[in-house]
Length: 358
Ligand SMILES: [Zn+2]
Image (cartoon, rainbow, N blue to C red; front, side):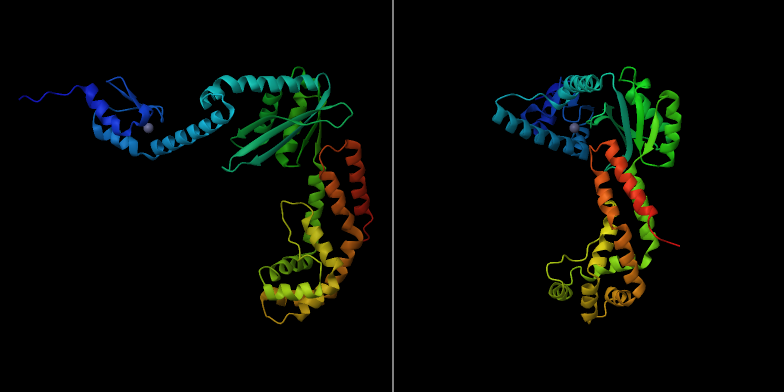
């Protein structure tokens, strides 16, 4: 009996059958194979090309994503009794409309008022540089800031920042005459960007963030007191996961939390830690002197607590700089009025100018 040459169509349907759960993975018209999950064509020349595609990591991941999405849709539709459109349908048909309606709301809220803009640049989890632009109206009352643009920058310099601000603000009618304030950090490229932007926005005044400025002062203070910095660092280290030392600490200093740590990204934590030692110096000194082990951090602490200069420096910080922390905290509060912020800033200025010194 002569062997009947099976047609390409049935051959393909045999090839894809084991992979084609619910006919949702591959589709074929008998001539071509299309992978529905990867959204691409797969060669029909040889069977092993299809086998190979089905084992690629891209295909496996796409299958997994598909499965998760279906589960989610299933659960949601079970609970709401409504069917949910596909993600790409949402992205293509719904998002642009929602974006437009939100932007229209913002435009109408701002109306004919003057506005401020805030620009900042940050790094996202992928390590890419992302610029953010916020705006709000200046009508004499505390106003809500709207995030109006979020964009990946290929490089961070004054040109890309200018471009980002200019293109993001185009959506607001007559914006050139409305922008009064630009708020940013004091990065060199921000300062240069602000100068350039004055060409487009003639009324623009650039102010750098006041909390940033105060933080710079605090960084300077830390730099001026290396021994207190050592005290803070070793104080934290000595009581980290050291039960017997912690026991002695608790006995001597009941109700007082363990030595605080400083977090670079949380402004004011260094000064707070210094104040902790200023307030608890004698008790802390007793604890350290009662310790008998020879850990490096303990040895360093023993020298520091006996150093009279350290004690004097702490007293000096407590007397002249302790108010800085509360004022910085008030400054960082959102929705505060400019006048109030200026008041706080003046207080900070007073604190700094009244420090006696050589
Ligand atoms: Zn695929």
